[in-house]
Image (cartoon, rainbow, N blue to C red; front, side, top):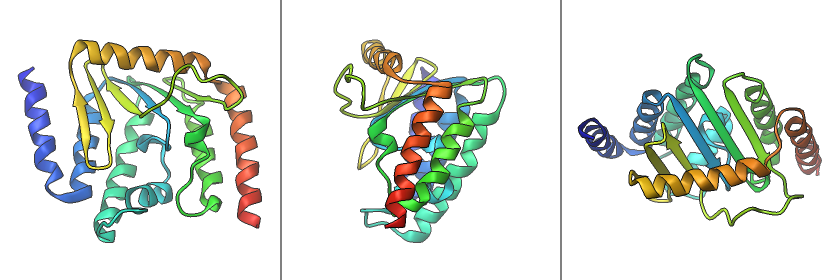
Length: 206
């Protein structure tokens, strides 16, 4: 518990240095975890974002310093190396709505979908998308990331909400599991991404 509190204090200190500091704190938290369960209902999770998507996600619709946003995007992309490291485990579940919501231009999304398809082939990564064609198992009010079953972090517009109570973690794990059960994986996932990619290319050509 003392180590966790020290890490949280370090994260608060990092937040004072803007978006780039916040991303550095997030990167440290990711690197300290052995396994993560990530649920996203509104956007591509940071660990799976392309550089262009990350830059826009950190700056679009917000009054931020663009140099700070660019530094933050660089930190975010650099931190993604952990996804390819052996000895770690990741589980990602996204709604189709998260995949179909794009920043900037639809032309950047085919590359983003290719990134998802690539990551879905890694043996230590489980990546699924809940299609619009299935009944939602719950209302996806917000996304969250569970670290080693001990901490769940909810990203908000103004900062991160860090939950450590056992009951809160159990609730988030239960929600993650019901969405994971409704998701498609492997070839079915890549087929769905291909269909969504075709829609993006059609949008971009208009």
